[in-house]
Image (cartoon, rainbow, N blue to C red; front, side, top):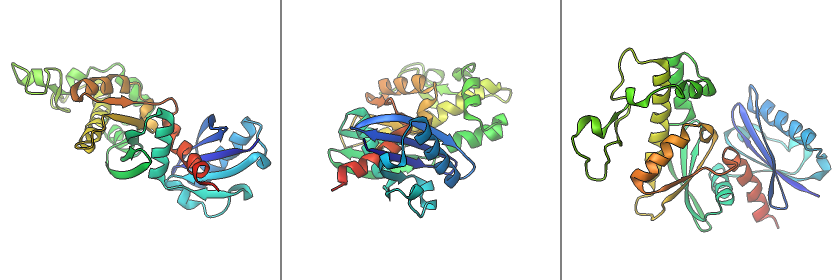
Length: 275
């Protein structure tokens, strides 16, 4: 039976999924030195691992910044490109089962896409994301390995880095409980441990993204945010986002295939619009 392959091509990382009978098949992530190598490496491994013949592939659907480097059909197969923001919305909507959401795509930076029924619209973004975390970690921790930073952060104490309302006020402020963050890195000392710095950096990035998402929803009535992209794999998301949910009275949702939503959306874009 035919399968539609969705591929989200980054500069060095490619994510690939199959959609068959409206089910996600064996998501795969490959890292390579350049987008073309990453794409072809991911595609070849995906077909081999899943025992898929070229003749089984109905369509290849590309998206992502790296897809601009691809100017010919992939392995001679029918190939099309999908708008990345549309793919974000379609994939997040499919994975969450929700129609009225803001999709928060946490990549190198962060983009925000509003979905209201069949309307999917890119509404902006911020230049804070995985690239920010990697760059600051490179300067402050002498590593840009996000997994290493996350592991260090598990042994850090955020109270040694951030200033909370309770540190500066004897009573809660309107809408701000005593444990709410008053200042990111506002309590950091010159002799802070690498573990404390690591957890501080991760909280800074995740809290900034979470707050930007809430601000983007003002006057829309939307209270549910679907978080997608590689940063959703950080275990610290389980600490930061529930805390922000209580503060803002919203819901941050990380779907099962959060890091593959854009690739899923590219495949769905073809499926929904073919014929």
